[in-house]
Image 1 (cartoon, rainbow, N blue to C red):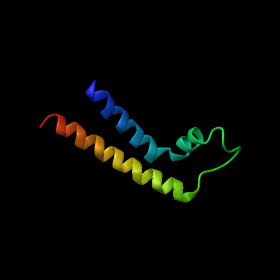
Image 2: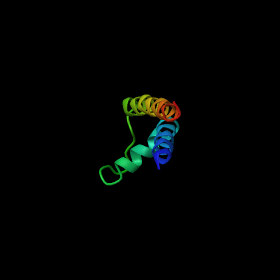
Image 3: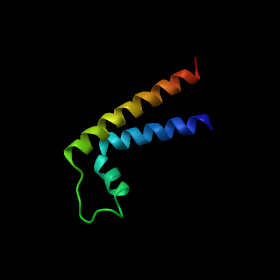
Length: 65
């Protein structure tokens, strides 16, 4: 069961880096009609996605040490 959280964190990080606009649409589904995310939002999502990927790799390595 420990591994599923690492995999989910990795998948979330990859999605944040590759498709931040998809996550924005999911997050603001009811709030905004035909809206688009700002460049700042996209940049911050990619930075946070990178941290999620690095964190998941560190957690995976820490399980085996």
